[in-house]
Image 1: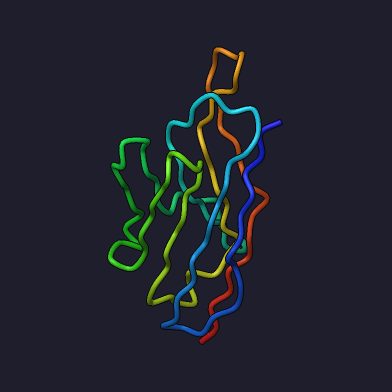
Image 2: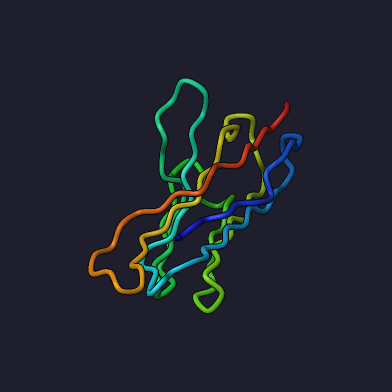
Length: 121
């Protein structure tokens, strides 16, 4: 009923840029926190960046100064602008959102299907 759809992944050379986009659609009453996670091969999934409904942002130390997260509450979208990409940024990036559905009382996390980001050296 609720789905997060990601786009914008791909292959880029070190130092390049990519912009990831995520749209939440379906039976949505409200969205609290939205963010992006990533998982590199052999590594745990980690939070990259998050943004509250009020626009407050947090970033992982590894991406501070290089990545920018933004959201549009009216469109239920969250984007991640990734600049100065490094090979260690390679991984599957997942959109995440804390969503309350219409006619439901509780909030839970929803996840996108993941989009591959590969940074070559």
